[in-house]
Amino acid sequence: MLEKWNTSSLLQERLSEFGCTVLNYIGDKIIVDYFYSEAMYEKYLSGFDCKQGSGMYDRNQVLVFTRLPDDVMVVVQENGTITEMYKYFTILKATMRYRNTGVCI
Image (cartoon, rainbow, N blue to C red; front, top):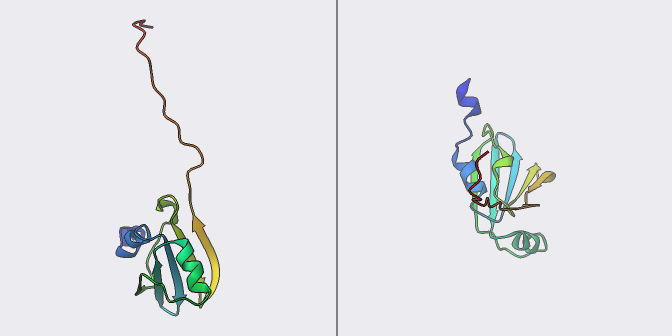
């Protein structure tokens, strides 16, 4: 049972290495196409052959899309039809600094 939730897989690690990854679930496999950026994926959709790479994995991979770094896009397909898209970005980033006033409370 613990093996099922182990998300430290090669595919999980690869999702954050490229600007855009397309996961196409076909039968019992996941066909993966990697792109340098979302813009390159859009060029690919218009007919250019600009993949960074491809791969094939077993369908039983457990993937956690909330672990994606900012500006990385993942497109999930089922037999070539887009079913989900994930892209996260930071909305607010703040830094707080405390002053040492010498007053103890």
